[in-house]
Length: 409
Image: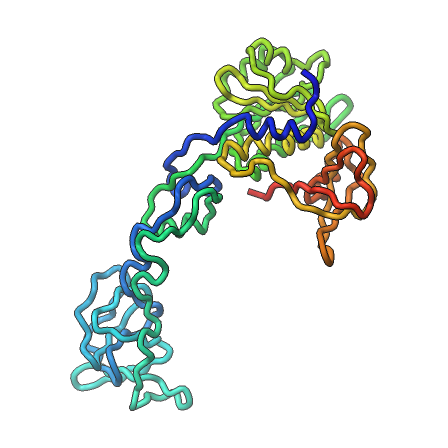
């Protein structure tokens, strides 16, 4: 199987899987998933007329006679108010019938009287009771029933990512669960006996950078990554981990080439996997691969060099995960930016080069980073995204496509 053009490889990844089946997720589990059905109001919001402020609910003109104890949120509707009556009320409490407005606490003065306390408006100049006590404008500091929405209103359309705000709205609207396309679960296998999990690198041993990098990157793409598993450089160990993994997608690091301990191709062939991608015309990361296992799981093989592995995430993992989440356009188009410096293009392959995005007067500007070798992370750590440099492009002052790094999830 020959290497695929970079754009073709992304299309293959975007069509390798349909969206995951819709599930009913608890509100606290639904954030980050894609909403599968419209969020429709199950009742009026608010469901009853209520006080918008702490103070006194009044009927008609004042002064008003207060002859009831405070009415708090969570209580049933109080007795009706007659003109000239008032009732202490808390924010969110249901209003009695006959109420015309709410007088805020800071605008009110209460004085004792023979047959109960009397309520006056506060004179703003003297800070004393206003004997005339004109009534607040009708509806002042009252939240009428259905002010935000009426039962049956479509509040949120399907296809959007569920945010904390949407969860709050859903709870207010009476939902306990939401119909969502769940986030795919990704199993991560880190291969390479030369990798250290902690401490300083030393001759022959280097730190594992991809184990810490992959889970948050995948989370930013909308997936849920299991904790990375270290896999020894042996065929049997790799086959065992693939068999045990409980995940929708498997991602491996390293072992994509044909070195003496690179067993991934042999493992996939022995499992009779269906090859989808075996090499991509992209730098860095050209040995990346993707295959479908007999049980339907997709395995993506990332090169072991860190920046090359990130190139594989951008090329294969991002569109695959987007498609499995039900995205309408799983292949992200990125943003257009003008190059501030030359980038040397490859004669045949697409290059993915880390850049920083700077604001310009008319358009975005992209400044490439020097440390952009396959094994380097310095440019990645300082970047905002990757410029897509096709053969023959990359000249300073020209416009390029930039794929932003995923947000922190």
